[in-house]
Amino acid sequence: MQRSGVRLIEVGTTNRTRIGDYRDAITPRTALLLRAHPSNYRILGFSESVALPELVELGRENNLPVVEDLGNGLLFDWSDVGLPAEENVCDCLDAGADLVLVSGDKVLGGPQAGIILGKLELVARLKKNALARVLRADKLALAGLAATVRVYLNRRRVPEEIPVWRMLTASPQLLEARAARIHQRMRPLAHWSVLEVRPCTSEAGSGTLPVMELPSRAVCALPAGVSAAAWSARLRLAEIPVVGTVRQDQVWFDMRTISDEDEDDFGRMIAESLKER
Image (cartoon, rainbow, N blue to C red; front, side):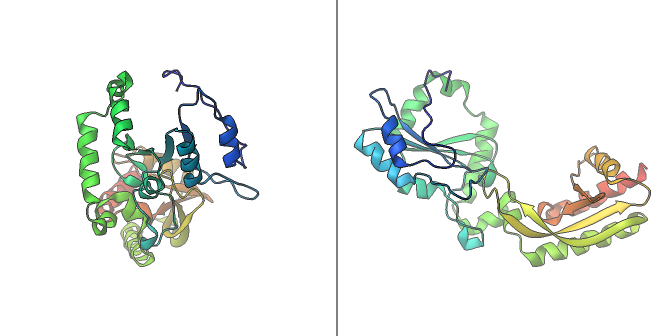
């Protein structure tokens, strides 16, 4: 924003922002109205925020474009796959936002990139800006993004082919079966102080669902004669890094983040880390 010469005017307060706060901030020099979605946090309790349709109406009254910084990259409602309702690109565009800003990674599941969606006239103006050339995605990122977005043409394929969706929508039965296989694979590799399957929760991250915990299963392990910190450090430095969570001096491996294709490599890295002791 500093590079472009724009001045950002904050409105409202941390926990309460009303449409009047936006209205009172408008001056003849106002160029647009911006709303940033709290994709990585939630404010609970006595809070109030401005709904996008309200902001769009105010923008129309004052001939100002409305920009929604959505962030998470969620293209459509995903409550039909068992996840809680979350604002998405389709909702924002249907509500009248002139531009919607999202990430190419996060829950979209593609390469790290910034995506601007909305009215053709405004997008064309942005493309003419000199910064657009400096910040443009390279051919590899564009190829990865195109391949990812192409999957969304058939929504039924998304949980199967987009890794982050596969993780978020994994069923308890699938996680339990995976935990049992991993547990069985690890059992003969060492003398274990701890080797158990336990319930756990997964946090989505990815710029959405910041307070949502998804029920999952973890394999909790600790080889005899070594601390969890030392073993987890060794795993992170493996040929294929294995990152677990250290709790109660044990290493927890969340089965939601291991795919069927990863199981052989996971077992091999566990075995290699134990040989180095």
